[in-house]
Structure formats: C-alpha cells, structure tokens
Image (cartoon, rainbow, N blue to C red; front, side, top):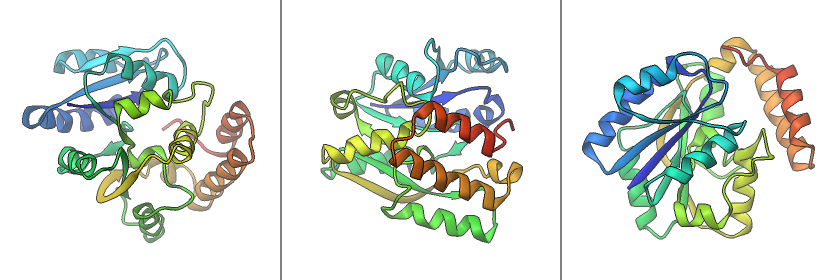
Length: 232
C-alpha cells in the first residue's frame, strides 16, 4: 500500500481540488490519503475532510517536518509519498511509484510543470526533469520505502524551512538509489502571481546557498518571510 501524506495549513481551496483526485486513486489502487493539518489550521479543512471520509490529523508539532512525521506514525503503507496541497499528481501517479520501486530504486521524485504558460516558468520547470541543485524540493513529491524513511530517522523537526533538501542530503549521504520520474506533476504558480519572477528566483537561490552554508533554519524562515509574500 502507498500512503499519500499531505501537510497542510489553511489549504482548503487547494484540498478541494486535490482530494477528489486522491479519492479516485483509492478506488482504483491500494493507497490511502492522510492529511496532516497544522495545529493552527483555521479554514474549515477538517469539516470538509470529514464529509469526504478522508483521514486527517490535527498535528501537535509545528512545521511541515513535524506534520509529515506525525502522519508517518499512523500510515499503513509500506511506501510513503509526500505531496504538497497545491500540487496535482498525474493520472499515472500510483503506477509510476510502484514501477520505480520495483526497478531496484528505494526512493524517487517527479519532474513538474507549473499551471502557467509563462515562458520563464516553463524554463524553470524543465530543470526538475534531471538532477541538479534544486533536486529534492518538496514540489517534486518525494516517495520512499517506509523502512528507508525510518532508517533515515524521518524529517528533521528542527529544520523548519528547507526540510526537504535536508532530508535529500541525508538520502544521498546514505547512497539510497533514487529516480526522477518524467511524468509531470502540476504545481501552482501562485507565489509567482504574488511576487515577481526575479524576486522568487533570487529568494530560492539565496535561501539554498545559505542553507548549504549552514545558516540556522529559524533565520532562514525569517528571511523567507521578509523576501516573499506567502499569504495567498
């Protein structure tokens, strides 16, 4: 079974688009969906999920790392797939994951495209189809065998930003075989709508460089909040 885990904070609008797709997956394949709501979620997501019969957690810990780790503790699947609430998976999502892990890989990611026809965003997305400095970002949807995830001790809950890159660094250190699947997810371009293209890309590059230099995660979070508008 594949456990699809989605950390969310006031993402009701996006969950209304995503959850019906995941329900379709559940009807056709062996998978489950777990929504890990933040402790401060206040947009009515829980009522919406109850009506649809989707499992969700009201997490005690703060930050996506804690939310995802809490969800893993109750996950029934032997495979974990971490999906952002504003990402739409391809129809072949489940079969792509199953096929990859049968081919002697223990983990993987998806390339993606934005829900925008902007030329520069198409260029940005093209880099997600191959290994590079931004490989491992959360929008690429990490999937991994649960035994491997637990061996790596899950996400670092002290890493309140860039937790996906920190986990990927450990995955590489332990030489876990992974694959990038070229079957595009669709990622929301909302941060580009509320911030300029140059500002978003400057922010992404600066935060990644500072993370690689060992900049404290709390300071990274503060800098991120100053650089980008994140309340959509």
